[in-house]
Image (spheres, rainbow, N blue to C red):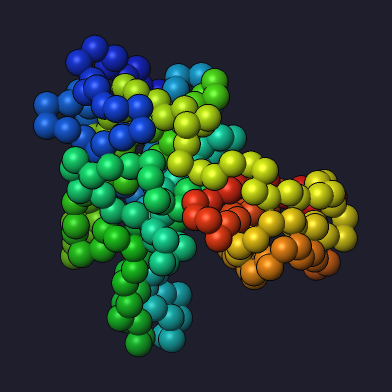
Length: 263
């Protein structure tokens, strides 16, 4: 595994409205990476805000048959490593990263998550013909990651390429948004639209609000979902001790995030 800690170029980064983060404007400053895996399993880490803690990793993992009935699996993933760091993911398929074009707006109407997400997934041999993720078949475009720093979300975008035949996946370059989106000005609805208690909990969490919810564990797996007509209880029976991510969607629109603690 390779770890890198790059100092981003502050001068010359593009300016944007505070609520209109945008992916890679023409002429914007960026940091070249040009990383490709050099082994069957290889990865690279990034310390985005230069605090000495790795925030994000890209990994290439290849699994080859050891028996006659096994397929070949070729995986290319990205994963958060530090607290406060989140990935932009697709709203219809939870385990696929959202692929952005240049100039696309970021930070609005997306699902953000901690954990891991597939960028490309190829399954071949012994009946395996599937592929998933937004960068399969050699597509080149962008993914976006954000980190909460001093009460604001700051955004980074990465240009990557998916595997195409014998050509391996690649992390090409990345840049950072000059203007952070204030958490206070986030498009999320007001916190009082949802009440969660007790938290931490041992047997379950009481939700008060009107809307629907989803709960995910630390690996990004959905553990439960449902609607809240006015109040409901999410049972924690059977859930391991740890942290869970709650997404609540009020009927008025938007999304509220909460961290649930299972004791």
